[in-house]
Length: 378
Image 1: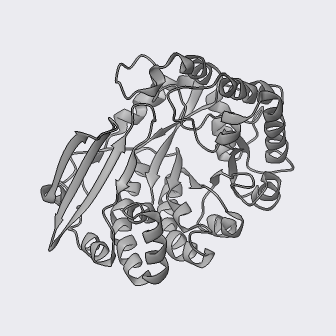
Image 2: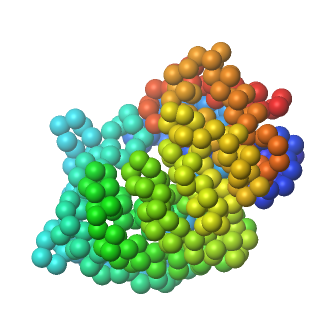
């Protein structure tokens, strides 16, 4: 099978010649070691072998956020000011101020040259009054057309080497990410009525966009991220049903209506949520982290939910970055054995995340290579 055929068969729940091996965010397209941008960590020579391995050997799944053309203007933009500057550490910072009615909502982000992520140093919502103001911000109207050309261009570049995965935040992610995590958990527990207002507001636009995307780009794999905000220990399982299942099920149904395959992204503890993930209609789940980061084994999920869900995981990034290859081999073999045990829709061997530092250890590359070598002979 080609890498594309292998992935499509696994996503669809059909037999494949072997389990695919995906390096998650590493895909050989969104990383470019020739890009001269000083914030491009992949310029460092330590990355070159791994990016070449990704392109040449891995079963590539490219996460693609879908854009819209000619959308109606977001009314919040006319209320927003941004200031960009460098802090005392040399990080590139952005201060964003939304002049809401009666108060300013302020967010500050920072990015370091040697770390491929954006840190939120100050969140828009700091108390209940901020939350109410955020909910009352004018809504953006749905409109415009799906930019299918950007997705089709990635698929053309991939050829038979992989597939795209349409990437989308759910309503809970839109709301929860506006808070510091501690403030979020308290508010989500104590102010359910306000949270439902926020989720209904965010969910309305997301559902309309989902329908347009699913109709224009049918039959693709999707990743829905955000549900982990309602996972233990942050919130009890009953609120996962209230904040995730209630609002994500219509989104999942819309994806499936046009032949798509919705995959739910939930880090950490999922044992008490798996029934809800299946009830929401998802056909896949990632990253199914092992203990102590998670609370289930792949074998447990495969035996109980393998007929309903394609499983993506369950190698921990910290193990890839810190373990000697001799030790890591056992992790890979266990994941492959448990992820393919018995019957089921299929299993994709995949890390929980990808490295974000400029310098890549030689052992890290060797562990990624080990994933390919073992899976190819499985």
